[in-house]
Length: 103
Image 1 (cartoon, rainbow, N blue to C red):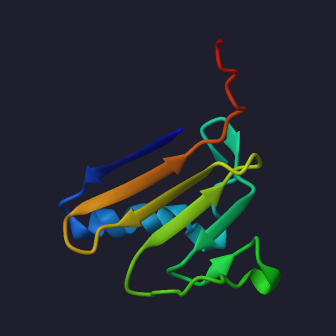
Image 2 (cartoon, helix red, strand yellow; image 1 turned 90 degrees about the horizontal axis):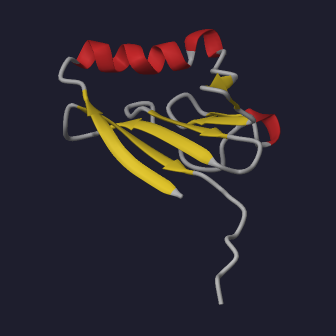
């Protein structure tokens, strides 16, 4: 299952505050709603606690905001600032057991 959408955030400072709160003192959220967070990848600061030394494999960019949260079952949520519009975009992919087909 997947869902992609965005929030309009016309105030640049408010947009920056959203990301600052998610990484406050490098203490990323431990939960999203009722779901535990297993890994966090922050390509703005160069942090990825799934990788050795907490260093991401993907390239970092200090000029763009992007944080991915991975859940224990492999589902993930990425939140990023749009580079061209006053938006915060999100991408969610949830894993589920395969459905049995009806015959």
